[in-house]
Length: 193
Length: 115
Image 1 (cartoon, each protein chain N blue to C red):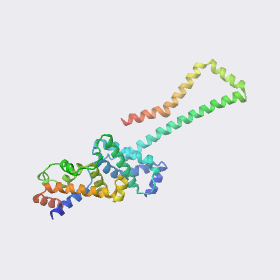
Image 2 (image 1 turned 45 degrees about the vertical axis):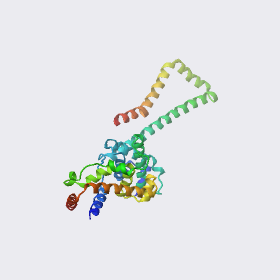
Image 3 (image 1 turned 90 degrees about the horizontal axis):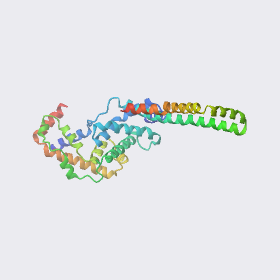
């Protein structure tokens, strides 16, 4: 079923079509919402709120952007409102030096035998919310800079800047804990996979 | 080489899915809650619709009284005035049944299910 047909079916009140829509876009919503609110216990309620808003506003959707971009915008705004409600959203520009200090002080040795990817993923979760948002939208959901601008309202330059800074922070953190030996382990892990 | 490896680890980690999960029946749950949400509104509209019909009937009776057959309406009202308490009780009970059936019970049922 294509996007236009799906939307028209949902607007006609076909609940099976809506269930199909939720199934199709729930991964997108859970990635954005999960990375932003970082609370598994609240995640289901927030995602449900997102899809309720999607249902209520689907009639207002115009095909100026992709449906996934439109749904991602709702997921982003709902998550940001949730964070604002609980005062967990930093309105100011993220501070890289404090963000770097916030990254876990675990030693690479702890990860040598396990999984360095998991270590980096843990570090992603500790980044400022703006960085987590753009990283998720760009690398995980593969949205373009323009689409990220539409979703978050951040100018394209800011999006690029945050992506660069977030990646640099992760690189610096990884460099500071990974030595030559652990890199060998990484190669082995990568080869195993 | 070192930088390439680090870059590779970061790129792969950024592209891998976070560990946040939704229940397998999430889509069904959302559809059900949307249906309940819509159902409640429909029930309320239906209640107002039926109330509007009742008011229309009363208006028709008033019109009949003032413009067509006054005695018929007087007989009707004399019956009501002679049995005012049973009539008022019957009307209130009917109205309450209507409200409970269309609005209160579905609303409470939904609330109860959510808990």
